[in-house]
Length: 463
Ligand code: ADP
Image (cartoon, rainbow, N blue to C red; front, side, top):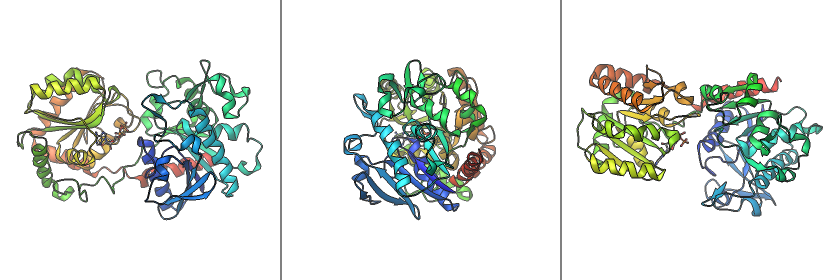
């Protein structure tokens, strides 16, 4: 199959979140399966500052690089739109011309495909920034013979971000007013680009099965539940893979001692090392709870904040790495003053420490209120660190009571109850080892997810 991945961020070129990991890892996994795939993304300033991989100018307005064995990555260049420090906005908020920027990206992507004569079976679009591609294909380009057999798949990575603009800006997209109605791009008097992607793509998916169902409800749909419900036969979920070349305790250079399923005992050297760097007492029998996260309500910090004092009074140690809302920074700093031998706090982004927490903790706390996919729980499973999660989205699809602890009523009391359950379980060393080992055997590889994407592409092609 000929596949185009169109995304606004792609590892290793530009990243603000999980979308970039998918943008980089999925094409490589597809290539390994023998698919013919190219990638198109905007040529941001940071793309052109990269030394490795090299990015070369192809012609005015287009640059090119390569990932994997031979995947061409094309960059849509435009000094006015993309030669900026950030991808979507700065300290003052979103860039005001984001609709110009990303409709330009979508239009030029389609023009480029014609120019290089890459006639795709599938254009796989991600989030609102590339959602105008299916809209153009079904409207302004509906009669274009070049795209006659092209189908689109649209992946929603987080439905909270929709690309909302005042209706006066419609002309910037080049679309006519025919698309501005409540069954198409209109949302309460505004232009909603994500909605356009939902309406006009051939198939829609999200980054876990549970999240694909949750977003069809009022609680999680951010207003898109109605339109998604109308297209429910075309909505599905595929969990993201994990990059095991980065997240593998048997090859991880950042941790104190490498270990694997066969040498799981060596995990305790990592626990000792972690306790040392975090200035916590070296106690092997006390369970260490690790957190690596944005400190935000979405990640469960509202119930964690309510419960943290009570948690610190249990026989535990808590190691927290993250940055985020100031109110959580302040509250946690108070807790460190109150319980210096129990809680360690690192308010920063630190990749090495993150690896050490995944390797050295006994339990990984991730009580997210909603979680489209989530990486932390998949990483911790591989490192024999038993995840404790709220039953939502990707967490519900990867953690169960055979490999972790899961609670299904979102409250401080349920969180603490589940933490106590984990502490009791930890005391039974034989059973705990079995629990760890079951987790370490879980496999969330990109190979598996790419296989499911190919099946999804086949389904779109048959439409
Ligand atoms: P998000 O919603 O933030 O994308 P995920 O669980 O999908 O949540 O991915 C978060 C990733 O970022 C994980 O790999 C996690 O280890 C990493 N991470 C988050 N905060 C930090 C931090 N302060 N330092 C290092 N890594 C972090």
